[in-house]
Length: 184
Image 1 (tube, one colour):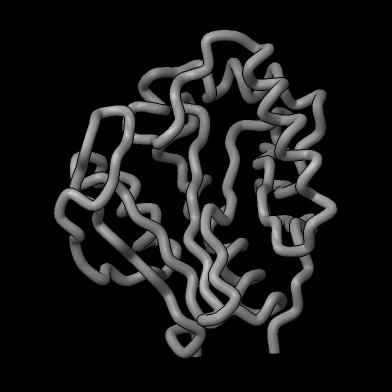
Image 2: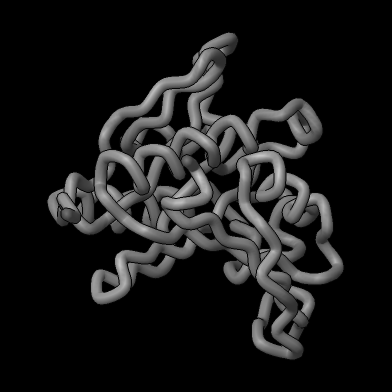
């Protein structure tokens, strides 16, 4: 049975996954949204000013009243700084499925932080919200994102040729998923 619980606070050993607040704008802007290396394979443009980040955060924050809205700030406990975000980018209630997106500060890449966040969110969506499937994709040219998905227990479903568009143009998408029965 599905329970629309929205963006609830989640915690791991190193991370606090929480709702964004407007005060996160500077961390978001300086840690990842303004970095063209972070946004290279993403579907949204690199932010050119902190004002753009603030406008986006206002929009996100206004959606927290919706129980089918899932968008977490990733706060690194060691520093108290917001270092990334992880969110449901597509929610399909009919098949109890969610597609995920995530990004984070380049300075912390390779430290297992994003797999830690993704694993926690997957557990929440499958066990608390009651979804059956959580999926994510990455551009073929960005295999490190696929490693994040594998470390979080997701399995590769396949490659959809020329199925996506990111800041590099039209791209092949590599899809991964995990279903509830995989967790048993």
